[in-house]
Image 1 (cartoon, helix red, strand yellow):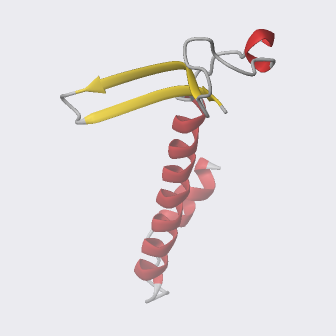
Image 2: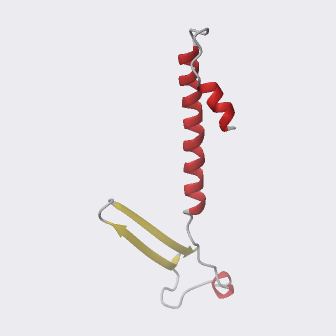
Length: 94
């Protein structure tokens, strides 16, 4: 594959449209590389969800909050002040 790209990238004096084609293909290759890197970042940087216990699945009410329409089973807030980001992880039961 590298040989094919190297052969393609050689300048061709016969074709006056060659620089435009090279820019178009370079942009396409860059876009493809960017998409691959972006997608793998999301795949490998995925969140670790906590498993829901059988007790939580069968829960119909909370003694500490009788009649509440919903409750938090778990809530975690992670803040990064340097990057101005906040990540909220919450599990709730309706």
